[in-house]
Length: 130
Image 1 (tube, rainbow, N blue to C red):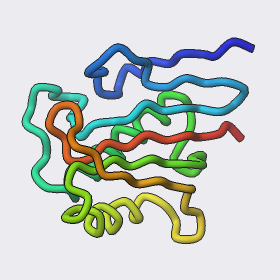
Image 2 (cartoon, helix red, strand yellow; image 1 turned 180 degrees about the vertical axis):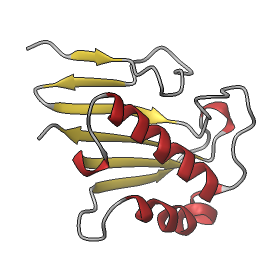
Image 3 (cartoon, one colour; image 1 turned 90 degrees about the vertical axis):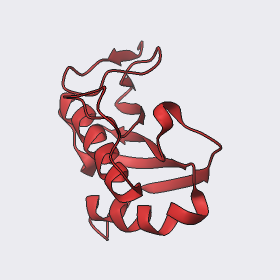
Image 4 (cartoon, rainbow, N blue to C red; image 1 turned 90 degrees about the horizontal axis):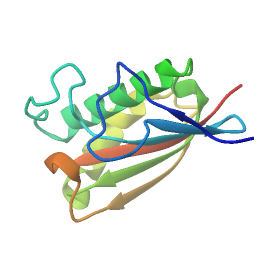
């Protein structure tokens, strides 16, 4: 079965050449989302790691919703932080509010030297259809 490449109308427009998500055999690979406002892509990014994490998670929800899925379908997450030591704890506190404590997906979190659009955080994920 060939992969299905998804673009979701309500999600932020990509900042590079990629699909919002690619689906193969029920697995959904969602491209990293930035803290951009899908309704105002030219607007300044939210200030601070907490606000940027919320916006990124909301953007991921938009992509999943466009595929009739939700965060409950997420199996694995990758988080990228430009200021790892400074922002790791605050990002975690915000991130954990999006998942039930007993149903956290697997996750990797790494520090990086920079992200597109000057973001402090980018998050991608893998989900599975029921």
